[in-house]
View (cartoon, rainbow, N blue to C red):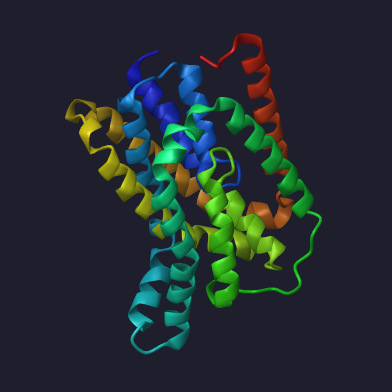
Length: 269
């Protein structure tokens, strides 16, 4: 398969899965194994195309974010919103920096762990769909204690296959936040979290950067951005109408298929 097609496939997977609770990391790692993409070059490629997905959220929420920025000096509610996102982001900084090397070197090398995480997370999402929120809370007005607890839940996504958005949405729902608001807060939290992870991974992978791969990176970046735009636009309405069960079923099916392939051939490549 030509490298440009691999870049398109990985870009699509990144954009389509980053903001839904199915684990973009798990999908990308399994896709790399299936496509036979080995080496630091493709690891760096995956790090760099994440920026495309980040910018998709920024583009769609630019008006709302710009309004918050303009009101920061005079509006306490704008400052409270920014603080709530920062409070939720803080646990990821500590856990991400402290556990980065262990996760990258040990957990990311286990396709079986990814598949099991997908299945367990799918079961959790299906169970959560039976819960009703205690009250409706606007995503931009979460209490700071809830924001911090959601941030702690997000740390579970350091385990490959768990899903960052899945952990934050699940945590928010368990805390009584309505599913649509939980998904929207997950988008807001994604911006600093993904930007921070991107910057840290980019620094760690700086020696593997290769300008000869700029064309492939550009392809993956654009595809991740475009597909991310589509997903973020549709996600909130989909969750409001269909809930979390479809994502849970998808996770369980993918994880089960992965385990079957691993048991038959000892690998996915």
